[in-house]
Length: 343
Image (cartoon, rainbow, N blue to C red; front, top):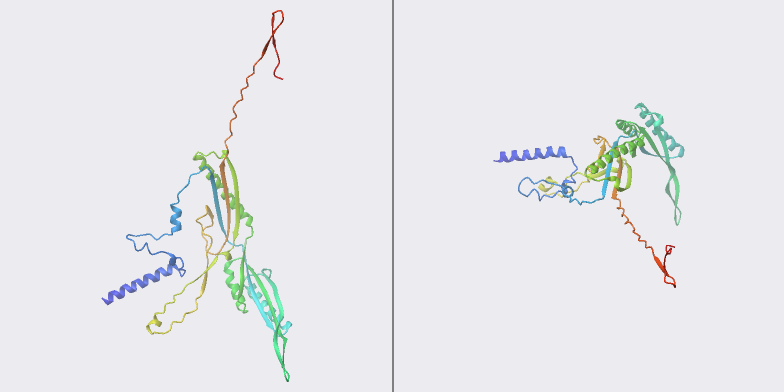
C-alpha cells in the first residue's frame, strides 16, 4: 500500500514538473482564475468572463454605418544603439582623464575586433567635477571643519551602434572587461518608417473597399450617406512594453520540521517583453516574432450617416378671375367693359 502511494506521489510530482517547464515561471494570471467551475459537474471550461461577455454581446441594429479598421506591423530594427555609463575617479584632473581614456580605448579595441567600426562608437561627456572631503583642524578651544578637494570624478556615456542583436553579447563582453556594467538603454532605429506607414495604409484601403462591398450586398447605397472620418498612426518601441513579475515559493518545509524561524529571502524581480496583442486588429503584418520589435500601427474609422430626405414642394395653384363691369347709360343701353385688375 505504501509503495502504491509513493508511486502516485512521484507521478503527480513529475506531471507538475512537466507542466511547469512548459508554462514558465510567470504565474500571475492563474492566480486570478476562479475555482468555482472546477467544482461543478462535468468538464466545466475555465474562461475569461470579459471574453465570454464579448462573445455573447447583444447587437443593436442601426441605420448609421461604421467602418473601423486597424492594422499593425511588426518591424525589426535596422540598427541598435547601446548606451553605457562610465564613471572614473582620480586624485587629479589629468590622472582621471588618463584613466578614462585607457578604459574607453580598451573597449574600442575589443569592439573593432568584433566588426564594429570607429564610426559606430561615440563618446558623450556627462560631468567632470571635483570631490571634496571635510578636513578637521583642532585648535586650543575649538575645531574648524573645512572642505578640501580630494579628487575628481569624470562621467561619460559611450554609444555603441550595431546592426544585429547577435552582436550585443560581444558588446557586453567588451564593456565588462573594462569594468563597465551600467547599461543605460538600448535604442531601436528604423531606416524608412514612411514605407511602413504606406504599406499599412494600402492594406487598410483594401479592407475598407471590401467592407463597402459587403454593405452594398446588404442593400445599403453608400452614395446616399454623409461620410465622417478619423485616422491615427503610432509607433511603439520595446522599452514601452517590458513588464515585471516575481517568481518564488516562500514555503520552507525544512524549517517547519525543525521548528526553526522562517527567514524571508529577497525576491528577485524578473522582466519580460509583452508586445501588443492582435485580437483587436484586422490586419497584422509579420505576426510571428522571435525577438523584441518595433510595433507600428494605423487606424481608420469611417462613419456613414443617412442623408436627409429632400421634401418635395407642392405645386402652387393660382386661380385668376376676370372681372367684368356693366355700364348702364341714362337712355337704358348697357355697355360691357373689362377692367385690368392685375396691377
